[in-house]
Length: 264
Image 1 (cartoon, rainbow, N blue to C red):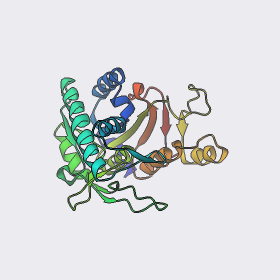
Image 2: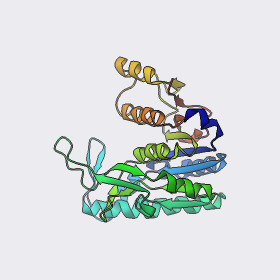
Image 3: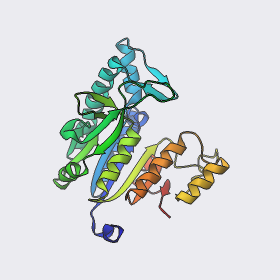
Image 4: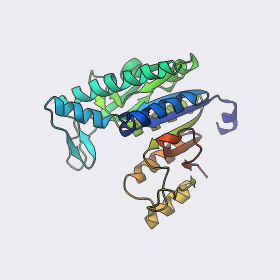
């Protein structure tokens, strides 16, 4: 497959977190930068803070365990409204204003992402939270080939009539993997830092990380905490045929800096 990769059209999958979505100046810049990315593209968004705020206004308590949201029936209604409606459609409308023909999708739309309800983990019931089983890359590729830019909300479904709250990083990674047979895919995780850092200095960006580098940095403690699963996701995407993964600041999604994850 790699021998043909240069013959494929380029496609960029950008994941943007809820913190950027809710900061007007950052969001304005991000949408401008995203619209300037050449070639085919997909936007995957979060929106957790907006969901928490909306739940509070509705008198619904947000329950978190280890930074992960417990999604009971009431909270599922909130995240479906906020992610699939408020956040998603505002992004779609604003991208249209930039000349990007965007289409907002949850996993239930066209059966594009099917998941199963997460089983108990360490005795914790996360509720209506989905772990991805399948992304329909062919369906997404069909849309993209018509000049449509999918905007993916962090929601999937189980095929039994239930929506499921699903991690946006996972949706971005699984979407990139599913599109790798059709396109030369670059996956961009945008967040608040300039990249993967070697130390506490915000400018100590590690430019390139391979699997060997990751194992070494993990062993010596350079990489720890939430960055470990993010890099594991990134490396899994590379192994599944994604051409490159970039972890960078939301203000630099065009990849001038940041950390590039490569196979070797």
